[in-house]
Length: 158
Image 1: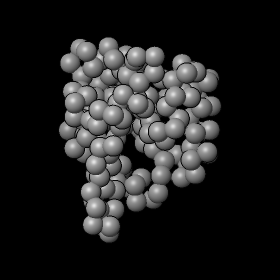
Image 2: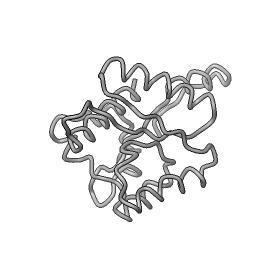
Image 3: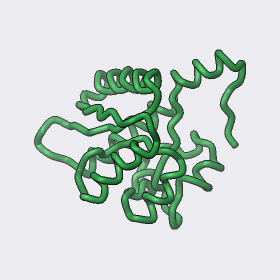
C-alpha cells in the first residue's frame, strides 16, 4: 500500500511543478532484480489506468553503482527526466548534499502524504537533509510477499 501512496504523492508533486498544456507525463527510473522491475511495471500500469498520467518507465541497471551513475549524469546535467526514481538508501545523503533532490516538506505540509504512514525512524534518520524531507521510503509489496513467503518473516520498522 505504501508504494501506491508514495508513487501517487510523488507524481502529484512533480506534476504540480511541471504543469503544461500537454497530457500529464512523468518519467520513473527503476532498477533492481528482474522480478522487482516486473512488479514495478505492473504498479505503473495500474497507476496510469487510475490516474490517466502517462508514465515513461526508464529501466535502470541492476548493478547499484551503474544505477547510481545512470541517475547522477542526468541530475548533474539538470535534465528534467527522471522526475521520480528509486535509489538506494545510501545515496540519499549524497544526492541531497549536492542539491540533486527537491524538498518534499512543502508538499507534505500542503496536504501531501501523512508521513505517519511510514516508519518514523527511517524518515528521521535517512529521508531528511538539513531538516527538509527529501525522500520517501518505498516498499515493493510484490517483492515483500515473495520474500515473506520464502522466509516466513514479515518486514518491520527499525
